[in-house]
Length: 146
Image (cartoon, rainbow, N blue to C red; front, top):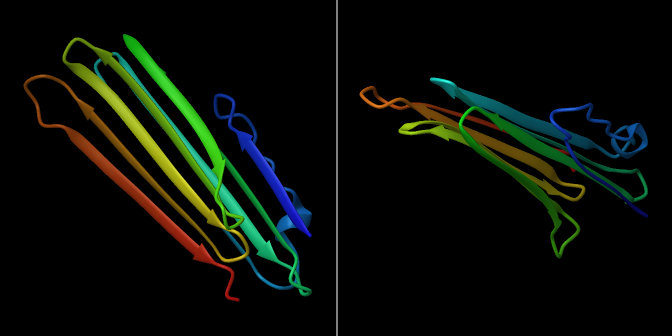
């Protein structure tokens, strides 16, 4: 039996991961990252979180949620989650705001390999004309130990 839970984060609302999908005796992995950037009157934030587990009889369950938002000037944000051919999940969120030469952007990619591992990475950057860009990267990974 495979359990799937896919949900976009609505403006960073609550993320609910089914406990039954993660608390089985065979092993579980969870992980996620988030990041934000701000410059001038712009800001952008993204987040992604996932989980997977394997039950004692080989059943697996996976979940992934991702989302983002941007504010100030012209904005763009988008998120999507896809199932992979081998039972995993891939999610990506991008958010960007710009006002003239000032901008902020953030991107989160999260991968869940069904019953095996969770990986997530967030990159954020902001820039104002006349100064150096400010960048950050956050990465996390976890395996079920199976």
